[in-house]
Amino acid sequence: MRRSGVLQTRSGKGAQNVFQRVLILAPHTDDGELGCGGTIAKLVEGGDDVYYVAFSAAEKSVPAGMPRDVLRHEVREATGILGIPPENLLIFDYEVRDFPLHRQAILEDLVRLQHELRPNLVLLPAFHDIHQDHITVASEGLRAFKTTTILGYELPWNNMTFNTTAFVFLEERHIESKIKALSCYVSQRGRRYANGDFIRSLARARGIQIGAEYAEAFEVIRWVLDGRL
Image (cartoon, rainbow, N blue to C red; front, side, top):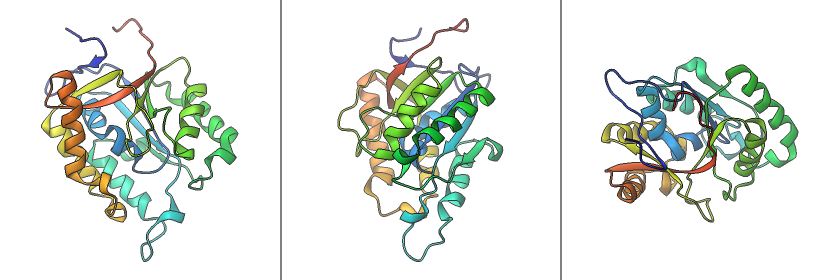
């Protein structure tokens, strides 16, 4: 039985996909893993085709002494750990912190993705995210995918508020995959929210809210029911 507001996709042997085609929109290369890495692992495990689009490799923000393209290599490794095939990863070249200057171009890229992929589920930053790049992707994502189910993922350090209107049950292996994927981002290790203790603690807190060991929380931005549900 499905609980209201709780996604319980089946996983493991004999799993059946629920959404079929899922699109992750990450303003920067690690945002998708941070916000919904456990859910990505579970969706892939359940047989869904998951596509990951990053809009910037944040070359201007790379720590001194590291190659400017280091995040491109790190995101390939991280998404691979979550089960996303290399051909399902797309990285655009928008400059970090300049997304509001390129809203129309970002919208046009998103509209092309909508026509090419026809996703059944889109995961993107929540609408109360205060980072200018994140809210640009969220706003233009809603315009491009307005006929699609859209969930906003949680990034607590950027969210002034967050409506926990949907949850995804996760198990130990999904959290382990998320932590392992984030460990690929050597260039980001100085950030406290990127460490395993924080990731596990947040997942446990969200799990307690729905009677599970672990969970990730989402905002329901748009929910489209079709003939499969």
